[in-house]
Amino acid sequence: MNSDSRPIIWHIAAWWPTPDHPGDGLFIREHIRSISNQYRHFVIYLKIEKRSLGRPRVLLSEQSGELTELIVDIKTPLRRFGFDKFLIRHSYQRAFNHLQKQYGPPALTHVHVRSHISKFAIDVLIKNDQSFVLSEHFSFYHRGIYELDAKQQKAEKAAIRYCFTHRNIKAIMPVSKELADIFTSQYGVDTDRIKVIPNIADSCFKHATHIPQDEIRIALVAAWNFPKNPFIFFNGLSLLPQDLRDKIKVDIVGHGGQLDEMKAHVTRELPDWNITLHGYKKKPEFAQILQSADFFCHPTDQENLPTVIAEALCCGAPVLSMNVNGIPEMIDDSNGILIEPKSADAMKEGLLKMIQIRHEYNRKGIADAAHLVYDKGVIGKTIDEIYKGVFA
Image (tube, rainbow, N blue to C red; front, side):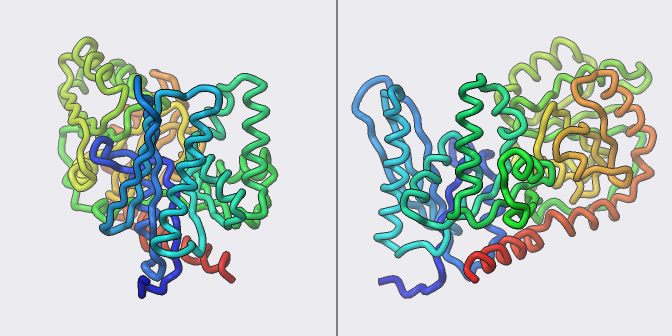
């Protein structure tokens, strides 16, 4: 019998960093790391992949370290007739049984994003009459759901409402006020069950002395997948006056499905520009790039509350981004410029203005203000308070 008497928290992660995908789910991991060690934390991450042949297999792999991780790996040749949904529910139940047998029952389960997979974990929790809280970072509620046909949309909205208003859900923690408003106005969630909890900027993102130079250094960091729109940045850049071209240095960090097309676009359309695509870098590495940049640019068509903007602000870098979704909650005249999305002309004007005023920002002030909002200690304390409210 384990002598550790601390309450157990299960964390259902919709995404999680793995050796194959080290950049996935970092924002979820940071939220879990921020919560006090008065609890014992167990992470459950389920992934499913299609096999061409063979019988379905479910592998459970437990890894002990800073956090205890239970990786559930489903391999199945059949994803029709609802079989995959049955298999996912069964696998979550198997994971729950394993942890309960080994360590005892949880005091609470914390679901980190209701995705197309983790929503089945919620089904199992409700069936087992277990209490849970939900952190929500997903842009599905203001984007993905409207890509469904009318019948699917109606069914999905009903399922979301059932989950979000169920008596077993004790708190919902969206990362932005905009997302909180969607939950109350469209899904009937009581405001007293909602607490906005933003994403965390790692402690490596901090102010460093920035010496203004004639060179104009612009940094971009992202997981380069839709709805990120790096091509709006490239198109806006190409519209800048010729005399600025030789002064601008662009550092682009990140991986994702758009990266090959980005490289081809730069080679084809911007061959004379000083643009470096670094690929994936660990956080301390691109923190140095943000600290040395004159400003950070985050081109996107839609976004919730981007962690990379919080990280840039904690470094003191002013931000040029889009006036969409939760981003206006992060940016005002003191720390950056907002422009309309999907417009190369708006990007050009934003770049010109930022280049003109880049040295006028109080970078130390930007960093100090950001740390009051996005620091691990600040956010972890708030999550702890929510837990205590559930236990009371």
